[in-house]
Length: 362
Ligand code: SF4
Image (cartoon, rainbow, N blue to C red; front, side, top):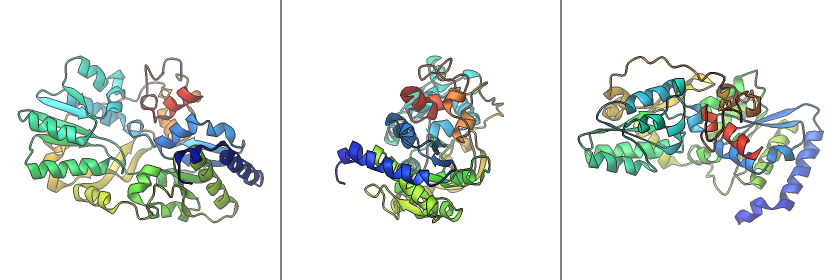
């Protein structure tokens, strides 16, 4: 297939659904497949994929949305940094509305007069720092292996250009340790993973070998309906034939080796450390922190931050949703007091959030 329309072809989709049904019929148990990418969550909702699958094939959403997995303690810290005098706080748009303790948010703080700016690229941050040499410019770095290389490149450029007033609050995370934690959780019973397309462009296929070694298929899948159905089929084939492996369905987007250059940028600037994920707790070596040699660009090193007592949002089930334990409609607040216009939890903020996707498409 060469053109995008072919990945939306109803005849191809129907043929894949028939094959999925035949394989699912051969097993009496329920097969649980987790997608670990916010774009997959969105696409599965938009194309109504869940309703097309047999009853015993269950797709559950995992921690694929960067703002959703950002711990409330990090949201509270960001709000503290943004409230400091002489600071320009910069972030990508979704972070603005993510609620912290007692409903605080960057958006509310900006309305009260703090200088908080939404940027569309890290180049914007360099320009803001350049134009405001008397101010401390902070960038909140969130996201996975897809965004961390550009943030690393920004830090390298700032160093080369002698920019001294720019720092990064890094809450970047890496996906494989979270998948490992989810795979090991006996309460979840995950039979296979639909691996993230974008993250895999950086990591390559072998980064998921540990999933196959744990006895589960790992299929790197694209984002169109035919991609997703083929991804499900490949996972079912491996399960029914008992040959777990790492497979690339998304061949038009993935180099099996990944992107060496992007990984070099990450390695030059960041080191891994334990990181807190909303809903998943602290996961060993799953966070990216700025190396000591570049600590002048690390917001945490530049400020004396006081202890902040964070409190999870009352009644919000995002933690269970991010582990696939609950679906959004099992949260008592879903579509009642929590909506995309008035999100009470992070999973309702971003279009990639599971609750937001459910609200829009179910
Ligand atoms: Fe949290 Fe709202 Fe989702 Fe409930 S519906 S889990 S409150 S984001």
